[in-house]
Image (cartoon, rainbow, N blue to C red):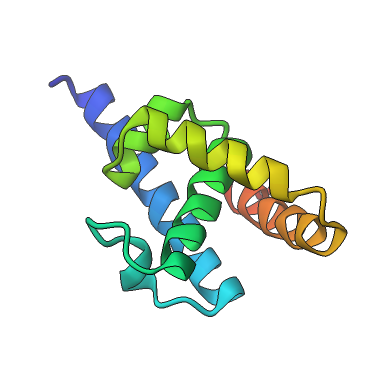
Length: 111
C-alpha cells in the first residue's frame, strides 16, 4: 500500500469517527453502539446511517470510501443514504441534518 493511499484511508477513518461522535451527541446514542460490528438496536442502526450519510455528504466521500471507513459494504452505505434522504422530508429532521452537515463542513474547511 502506498503512503498517499494509506494517509487517505486514515483521513477517511478520522472523518467517520468525527461523524459518529457528532451523531452520538446530537441523537443521544452511545458512540460505541454506532461503531459496533453488528447492526445493534434500531436507534444505533439509525444513528450509524445518519453518520454514514453525513460522511458522504459533508465530506464528499464516495460511497466506497465511506463503506471502508465504517467497515461496511458500499451497498449498505447506499441504502443508508437513501433512507436518510427520504427522511429529510420532515422539516425538523432536515433542519437538524443541515446543522450537523454545516458543522462537519466547517471542521473540514475552517477558512
